[in-house]
Length: 264
Image 1 (cartoon, rainbow, N blue to C red):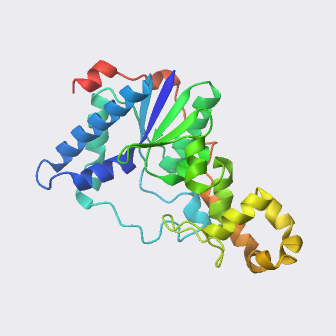
Image 2 (cartoon, rainbow, N blue to C red):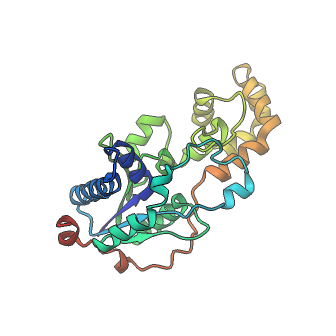
């Protein structure tokens, strides 16, 4: 069995932005989203599909870091007002939709992907969000519909120069401008990648700060981490996707209604 998980707002917002403006922009967006999902489900040979939405609310990340996603462009108001109608359209056409109050879609998707993979399913996450690459393993892949590119373990390593399991530690040091996560000032991608190549994890780096400081090439990074290790750990918590969201669904609820969806 195979599960396709669609990052709903990631797909909808991008397709909406490219749809012709006017009275039928929402209808065009719905139809193009359905076509994109059906095409990816067919290529992946998905037996189960779900669209994961999220409600606009403060989450645990905002409580820990009030600047989370600060200055991110807001969703167009016309689209915001139609989200209930849009999700209703997908449900009416046999496409299960899921959103959980108080939880970001990213955490819901991560939990669902992890549980499905543990149960033996192959999982494809349809999203352009690089944050999902931390989940990639032998059973979980991430598909960028717009660039026609799929991240598996090899592709993640080629793109980032790191294993999927190292990405959260990487962002802990570099920060993440997309989500306005702080990281450690003065440590960029090259330095973070170099340190992880040497020590494999942020924990090992922090344990070996004295050794790092004795190496002239690493002294600057050692000083930065000595001063800002708490920020690095905070950023790691924020960047790590949760795997413990209480989903309250059964796999049978996500069965892909192929013929009905393709005929819509």
